[in-house]
Length: 341
Image 1 (cartoon, one colour):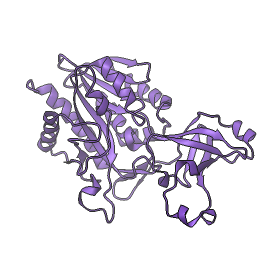
Image 2 (spheres, helix red, strand yellow):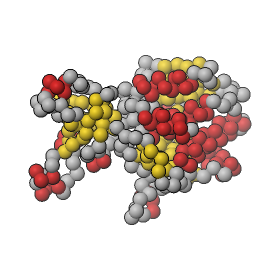
Image 3 (cartoon, helix red, strand yellow):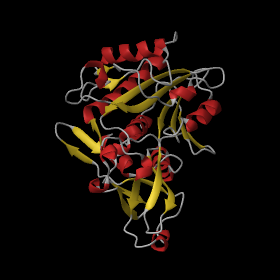
Image 4 (tube, one colour):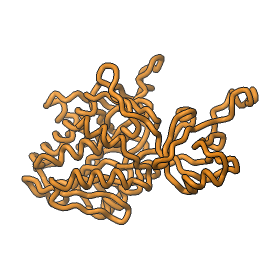
């Protein structure tokens, strides 16, 4: 799974331009799927027949897209003004490399000696940043990029320290990697493995996926914010690396189904899968749209804790990523074996 995660993180797939990730996932899923659908939004819905059929299907969901940048203006001197695709803290991108296909650039800001005292006391805004692609003029820049082009952080995937992994887009290629691994196994129950688009800009792909499938249960696999850093006390850390899979009971978009939360918790305890829950209500997942689809859907979630999420250098622990996979497998086993859920 970790090797699959590395390969997925290397691909460019900002919200609305998930093509490379979608092509990779379709190819990887094809040998194991009984049916693969791609809808008009670009979601992939891959079905695998299980040992048991439920009245309404089970779906596992992870989003393919990542945060990125989009070109809004090319200046006369060849610099690019841009907007963020998804939620990105401008503080984490200054001086970081980005790429638009084969065109490379660096995110810059006005030199410190040109700033006022007041500017040095405030957080930089997106309008204060630019991307330098090395062009000598507007015409030269237009030979390489165009308005509306998507870009992503240009960041290597590196294992380091005591079992940690640094990469862009761990949110949510970790979920995609887990789903692809699970697809290799015959599930205990008929299952749709869903890879959604445009989560980072409003949970958009999940809405059409859920409407089309009308599932009875959905498990969302995600990456979530970990702030277990020096001088961060108590609940402010949200969750912690190397402490296991995160099972949230609530976030900014969803109150998760209490029965399914307990099912996941008990399944992890029974199988000795390390788990934790969030100590702060934050973030949101595709479940925010899914649970409101049609007559309603019972939802739950699993997440890998990720430091520096939505940055060029997100960091996760390999043991936590593996725990996401193990807990998702346990969910299917419990759903397939319990007639009372």
